[in-house]
Image (cartoon, rainbow, N blue to C red; front, side, top):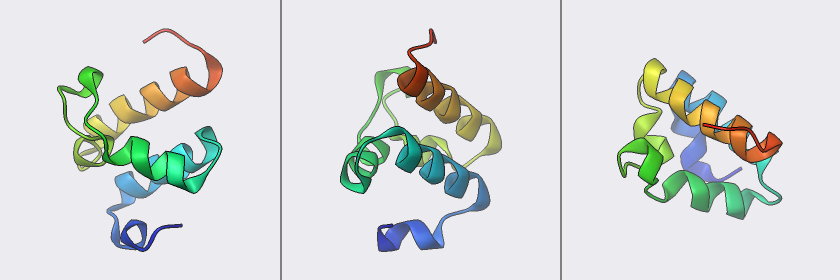
Length: 71
């Protein structure tokens, strides 16, 4: 797990774990977490996950990505 993940807030930690489980490599997960996303008002998933509500939005995206769901 990348070093910057170890200092994350609790809600960010859950998002990081889900991303690691969703994507094939840690590098893919890290890139996704640090890239602005249009469904997150062009914030990065890590920025959005700073609050519990934001973390829930990111988790919904990860579930949809992993299982092919609708957002």
